[in-house]
Image (cartoon, rainbow, N blue to C red):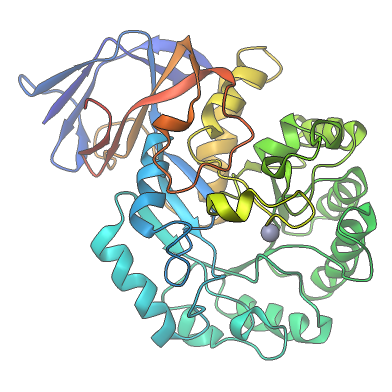
Length: 398
Ligand SMILES: [Zn+2]
């Protein structure tokens, strides 16, 4: 039993002082006693939901494990996350998925929702067992690679729609180099053509260039069920900052300043509905290769909230409600998870963020197994102080 005392919650787009009471795994109206946690100056929210995370296990435990990845999530106030399926074995069948589910059950400290791959081993050659997998997963993705066979994608859309699930697309057209905006925009254009025929639920991961946002907005205006996410790195970095540093290398790559501004505008205008991290841990060796040879991806779970809060909310470019919508409500809605609130009866998945004090992010504090972050050394507001999942303190207070 916990009493979170003297913190702020967001109510009607304002910070309001309110004590929160946790009994067992739920929020309750009041408690007379319990462990008191001083939340003076902290913002208390329902836990963050990150729909784009690479936990690397099973298969690549030298980069990250379900344990270390979810501890990193907890440190970021992320209580629910969706784990991408570029794993070994790839969750393209119930038997393979069971291996991942077993480790989640044993080791995860936050709620992990696995993606299944849309195609077998993400090869775009044969569909995964979509009917069976739909009984266990909410979403399908071949993230890490683009769909290379649009006829198969169309078949997949049909199947996934039958079971009322969603496809999350890593849009990449291999007729172009990744650094060419067409590599993303052309894939988006072709996939949207299919979506308009089949009218299935479709989500674009990590959209990064202005042409893609324009296409997605047109589709949304036509009433298609299309959503998209942006990442903190595409919002706050651009290619001029790379300077040969492998910690600025990811796919889609950092793009021009103009694209960066288009990314911010897309989020502020609601074309992008979600901020997700694309948390992609790699070993130090893999990331200390020269830029051209280094692997794509950066970690992001621990800096998600501080980057958004410091750059967009504290600056008044966006509202407190936007913050809640981008990081909690919209991702949950897209994935058809239950609504969450800081009210009696709801699950005690809760995060407390220090929004009034700056903190310099440093390598030593990182809970992920990997340290490939371009944001090390950044001074930011809004780092997580405490995180609860089902009423259990999973980060903070140590
Ligand atoms: Zn991707």
